[in-house]
Length: 267
Image (cartoon, rainbow, N blue to C red; front, side, top):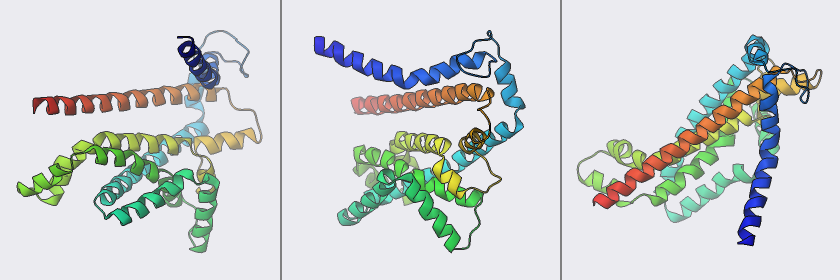
């Protein structure tokens, strides 16, 4: 009993330390003071200033754009790669899985420098295209690793059964396999989206100098001026969006598992 109480206390204390800085920014996003720790009264002024800051809003738009484009591309490539690996020979599958894990354990700075050198050697100028490639390289492995467990949990006979019943490989893929692994695909998409939104190193090395994201914009501001107070309001929005994404992902996974369990019970 005492061990359980101590274990829970330790976990809650770690979570408290993790989220305290975020909650502090959220609380002080409702006051118009220039620095955290000074309370000038409750107001929504910073939220209005946030949408008036054209440079910051441009950076937000660029961040969202690159995140969604790279997440979509990563989800397609990662899902197809996981399916192809699942139906490959054992030796080929092990090689693919080993190569896929490299971006996960490799340092991000190494990937950024390698891609930068590669693009320069090929004569490519840094642009939105090179930035998308960099973010895809960063996130595609996480989609692969999210889809792979769902493929392993899937009944391997349902795809062959669909083919035996007259379905074409494409129809069997869309109608039978994809619904089974959909939670893994959604999880991979959400994970790649958040990783792209959060990225700084690859973005800094592969972007056009005139293209700013949230992370590069704040880094540029910090080099010359204090962080604008309206960034605290932006932090609140980002945190709320992250919470909503996690809730949607968990609800989707729960409903899918409940549906699968009810189908098995019906049998």
